[in-house]
Image (cartoon, rainbow, N blue to C red; front, side, top):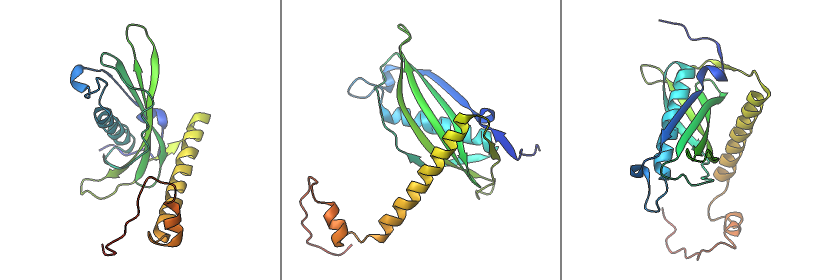
Length: 188
């Protein structure tokens, strides 16, 4: 059995996927269904993380998927995935989705997202992953952005845990929203 290297570059685990969008992939509006694109993104995240870790990986979370531009039937969708960050057993896979009109050659950025993947061993326990070699300015930038996103998530989690939903501070946050507060049952 081959030993896992202590460090790998982002290039070692990059994955590219290109697919022609078919009518069967469309939603009721005639555009490619977002759920279909998310499914492909999850698959490429798995492939990239597994390639880096050398193990089976599972999706732990998906950070912000903003659909910037619709994808049309007949366009060629290309997804590019790379490892942006590694922890002990987790990895953040950055994915960029572009679509190309194959007749005109026009390419548009459709979305980007970050999948946190966790490496698993044969027993289903978390497994250690190789470190990441940051070889370019872009590698450093993507790693730092991942660190900032992780710190922001931890900070937000602490804030959410510290605020009781019915505290004056929490209720003040509701002002200005299109809601009617009608608390009749205080039990959960």
